[in-house]
Structure formats: C-alpha cells, structure tokens
Image 1 (tube, rainbow, N blue to C red):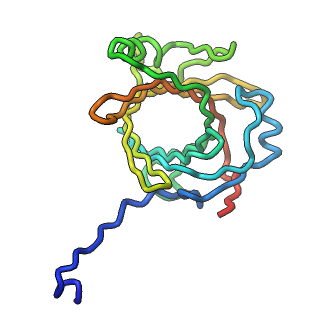
Image 2 (cartoon, rainbow, N blue to C red; image 1 turned 90 degrees about the vertical axis):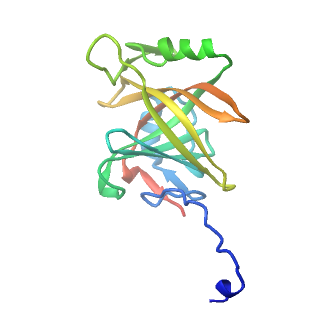
Length: 215
C-alpha cells in the first residue's frame, strides 16, 4: 500500500539456484567412506575428499527434455544429477561424482575448430594410460559432440552461462563398475571476447544412499 503511494519500486529477487536431494548452494554433503575405499584404487583420481562444500550450482536443459544439475564443490569436483520428465527425486536417472582432470585454454579460432573436429569426439579416448570407449555413438561414421548451455549460480550471487560441446566415454573397472570420462569444449563471452577451453573430467556412479547431507 505505502509502496504504491510513495512510488517505491519492488526489488526484484535474483533467480534461485536449483536444489535436489537436499543439495543446495552453500550446503555440504559427505560421501560414504567405505564406498570410496573400495572403488578409488581402480579410478584415475587419488585422495578424493569425503566431505564437500557446494560452492556453485549448474543447470543445463537437454534436447531430450531432461535436465542436468551440477553441484560444484571445494575439492575440484562436482556431483552431477540427471533428471528426466520432472524435477523431483522420483525423476532422477543418474548420479555421478566427477573430478576435473585437466583444463586447457583454447587461444584461437583454428585451435577451437580442431578441438571440435578431432578432440572432443573420438571412438576411443586415452587418458593416463587407459582407454575409454565412446558412449554416445550416432548412426554413421561420425558422432558429433552433444551441445548444451549450462547456467551457473555462484555463492556471491553471480550467474553466468557457458556453451558446452561434450562427449561421454567409459571403461570397465572392478566389481562390474565403470569409470566415466567427460570431454567438454566450452565457450562463453567475457568482455565481448570468446573465453574457450577444453575440460576433461573423470567420474563414477554414486547412489543416493552413498550421500549424507550435512546441511
């Protein structure tokens, strides 16, 4: 009433970062210690943290109608939750913990084209002496990277968007499990210029029961 009389403008609220499974921006979670002890010797990563603080949250909508949520942590990792057909826990189809392996800057258009044509999507991808097989194979000889745009929410309130062109790989490890590899060519506009990089991450499956929410 008084705001209308005196012409006070309503302050618009910033979009809120997505939440799922009790995971939220600024929250924390703990991974099952026994699970990590059993699987870590077979993985590329070493010394994975058990406790994680969520410092950013990413959201990407897929052409299939699904959605990817990523909870970036203070251990150079992100917990990825894939949903299909809705936004509740009943719509979760996949949960993985990913660790960044390397990030390389792409400095020119020619380098970008080479990465897009020859690096992101290959029948096999070798990393650290291990061969990973491409998962997303298309009909025909070529399997182009999958394109998506991720909106990222950070603790300081900053919101940004990154275009990503990704390919998924995997290799079999012990106990009928698999280690996955994600190769992503990424670009965003910074000060009217393209900021581009090639990001390689390795991951493994996580069950909701492997995660304890700390608050």
